[in-house]
Image (cartoon, rainbow, N blue to C red; front, side, top):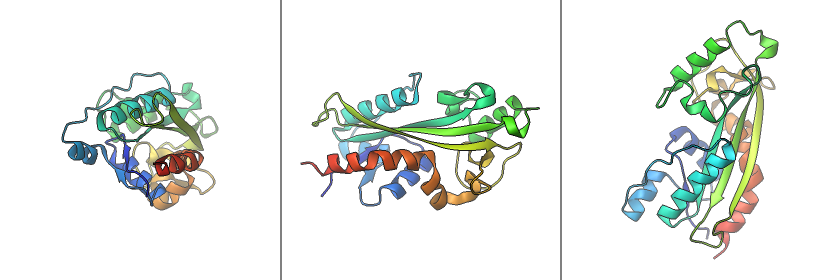
Length: 208
């Protein structure tokens, strides 16, 4: 019997994807974990300059509050023509609290006039597992995954979240928003990061 795992995010799209990638694990949302311990879990300030830094910070803080192993994701879009932007600022590219639509609109403006061959980009995800009151202590287990694609000049598809409607996955000829959760879950940057970390994650959760 494995121990429960808290996923340190309030992004429901990420939570759905993670639960599909870990079907045999009891994955608690932040709000479910808060109800379990009877106290509020504040949002973690993501002020690191790397994905792994933000993921590690989120995992450690949520683990410390809940007393449970916590898995955190930090991910974003890196556009080559924009020198890797929006990068770690992907979720707040158009400002703090910006909607997906606002972030996508700003990205399209930034790429105005950029030809298709120069609109290459990738989604990058970093996962970090922390258990600060358990045997991991101050250590974390991390893994990373990427998905290469091209940014379109208009959105396509109604599924997914974030920049999915603009991110064309050339191998399928569809955007992540068109692929749907199941297919995207097999091909995405987050899925690749999960495949990399999953053996160590399962082994750790199975340890008494």
